[in-house]
Image (cartoon, rainbow, N blue to C red; front, side, top):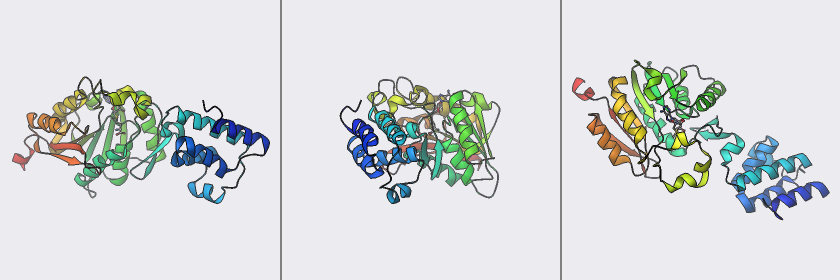
Length: 296
Ligand SMILES: C[S@@+](CC[C@H](N)C(=O)[O-])C[C@H]1O[C@@H](n2cnc3c(N)ncnc32)[C@H](O)[C@@H]1O
């Protein structure tokens, strides 16, 4: 509750003389910061950032002021801005998100960059995205490589529904979305590249009870006792689904690069590597299908 603060003033302002966009943003800024305030105002007015600048003297209707107040209260209570607005940008595209899916993270764009480096633009290759969530990775790849045939798997029906909504929104026709338990959803199928951003947070990680993570689906976050359950399963099972020269790329936690490389080595992947994200954190590891370098 924002007692005596922005909530009251927004309500009072709307009742007496009305409150302008600029005044409302100024008041909200003190509680949630200017970027979040602006995004919530854009949501209320269904308007662009430029519109807010040009129309900063526009007086909000009582209904708009009340809606803005309610959104601010949700944000003050900690709800992620992406769930409040229902969208998040990833790889230059807007994605629908809901509490059924992980909010796509900027660092995951590295996984897409590395995938695109490995996908030729002039021929058809088969790509698998495991744990697709909102479909952000699979859709970014499918849009950037129209000849690729992309399959995206998620165990959560809610996530699969959001991924399908995003697929429609981005008019993607080279992607199929499958509900299933990792490779159970694609039994017997072979891929040239498998990518995954699986749940990798350890059970006791204090971050699970902080910030946005409190609102995100546990099935998208929790990787078991040490956070590595899903990474272990995927690294062990992927070779049976990789073409001869195929490769696997997995995103992992800031402190999991070494263990992931060990797991890849144990499973006999070739040319095992780790790549840092823009913040310099070792974020994605991968390797070629076991035996592929000998075969080349
Ligand atoms: C960390 S989220 C990644 C979501 C999305 N790929 C992204 O990067 O924003 C992990 C996803 O894996 C899915 N998942 C968890 N366990 C799974 C399983 N056994 N089989 C398939 N998907 C699973 C979750 O539902 C969740 O959508």
